[in-house]
Length: 320
Image (cartoon, rainbow, N blue to C red; front, side, top):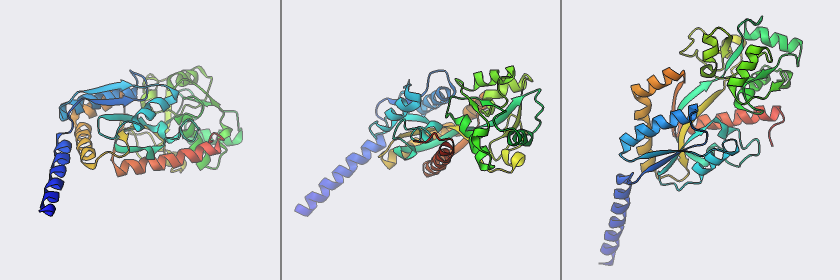
C-alpha cells in the first residue's frame, strides 16, 4: 500500500509539472534589449516580440535596459529567473565586455535560444580614394605604418576589432593603423567622406546610404560570401587570402537553467518568426543579414567569437 501511495504521489507531481510546462506561457513575457530604442537591435527585438506574442498567445513587452556599454541590459537578462518569462536580445558585445573588465558575464552565462541576424564588417574607403583594393590599402600600411587612420566605433568597439583582427592575421601590427574613436559608424563614415580618416570597417547596412550615394566605396566584406546588397563584392579571403571574419550579431537568449520543454517551445516559435516572409522582407528593407543558429550551434558560434575577440584585444593591449 505504501509503495502504491508513493507511486501515485510521484505521478501526481509529474503530471502537475508537465501540465505547468505544457501551459507555458501563462502570463506576459518581457523581452530585454540592452541598447536604446530606435536602433537596429531594438528593431529586430520588436519584430520578434510581435511575432512571439501571436505564436505564444501572451503579451511580449519589449523593455530597453541601457547603460554601462551594454552591461546593464545583458546583466538583467542573465540574472532573470529561468522560467521563460524574461528573454533578451543579446549582442556581439557579450563576447567583448568581459575581456575589457566591464563584467564577468560571457556567452556561457546564458541559455542560448537562437542567433537571428549577423552583419559582417565591410572594408570601406572614400569613393575617390586612390586605393582600389584591400591589397592596395594593406601595401600602404606596410610601407608607412601609422599614416592611414581608421574609425567607425569607440575605442575597443567591434569595428576596430574587425580591422585589428585582419591586420594581426596577416602579420601586420594592428597598431599600424591608428584608430580614431567615434560615436558609431555614422560619424566615422562622415569623417571618412570629409577626409579625416582613410578606412571605416563597419557593416554594409551602416555604409549603404553613402555607398549608394557614390561617396563611399566598399572593397570587401569580412564574411565567406558576398552580401545580398552587393553580390559582386569580394570576400576578405578573396581580397587578402585571410580567413578572418567578423560580424555584429544579434540573438535571443535567457538565463541559465531554463527547463528544456520551455526552451524547445521558445526555439520553435523563434524559428517560425525567422522563417517568415515578413522577417526576410524586414531584413531586406534594412539591409540586415539573415543568419540562423539555434541552441548548441548558437553557443558554439558565440564561443568562437569570444575566443577571437580575446585574441585581438590582447594584441591591442585592451584585455584585462
